Length: 107
Image 1 (cartoon, rainbow, N blue to C red):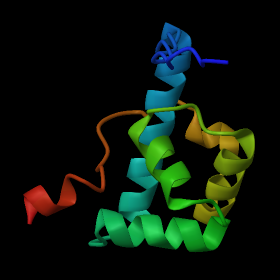
Image 2: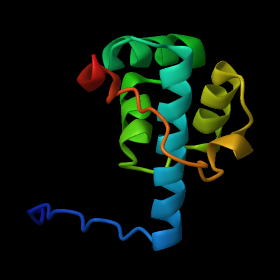
Image 3: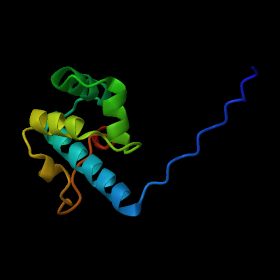
Image 4: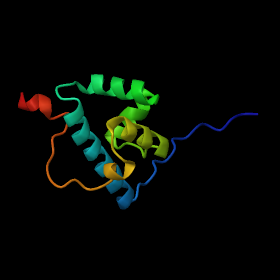
């Protein structure tokens, strides 16, 4: 029996509130990482998060790029490692805070 050719899976449409939540999470993570790990490269920070949380590098990278919605377990473990609540990671930031990608540009 011949198999039908595989077709590309359509990309999932993300609602605006879900994207806002992802973007807020990433902004909070970047701000907290910038404070907790000053002058660390993105690679070194990701390696630390992988080791501390037990999650895969690709899982951390996807979460930090807001590419996909992370699991509750991933957010909980990263929040615990950073010493904050999950709720704090989803609260809007009060103003412009440093992002760990921006630190190299300043120095």
